[in-house]
Length: 180
Image (tube, rainbow, N blue to C red; front, side, top):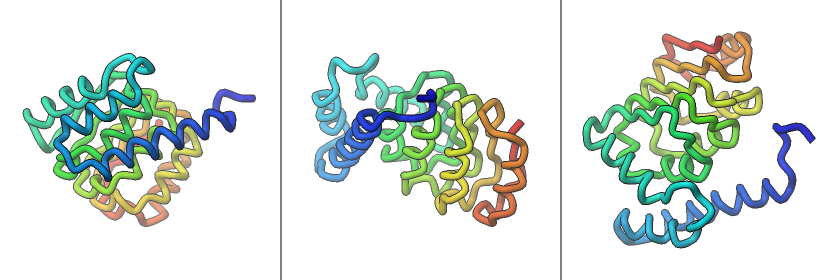
């Protein structure tokens, strides 16, 4: 089995984690602190950092500038990217920099689930182990219509994706696209 293939158990666990996290967000009527506590209680001991710590970091960044969120080289887990995709305040972000996080195709898919990406003008996904599968997911998204700049360099994709992404018409404002 190649490193890009998932076993059925891994796939089931990823879907369970995604579903669990989304259920906590949608079903919780409490503050962000109570949401974090619920998440930490579910996953405590299986992570290198608590979601509460990650949330405080994101909150501090957005407090400094609610339009720019730079989360560079943080080894963001798929669980954290799902959390980020639902984060209050993400809808105001115009520039999202996720360089060097090894998100992979699953992380990109988790991010693109978000309904809060409509104001993004610039998205930096350099060096995230994104492959053809991730590009196919990106090509299908309807949520990045305002995007002007997209940087996908240092991923496992070729220059042909520039032409493909520009030709599909899903990114009408895209003026800068870098893949290699």
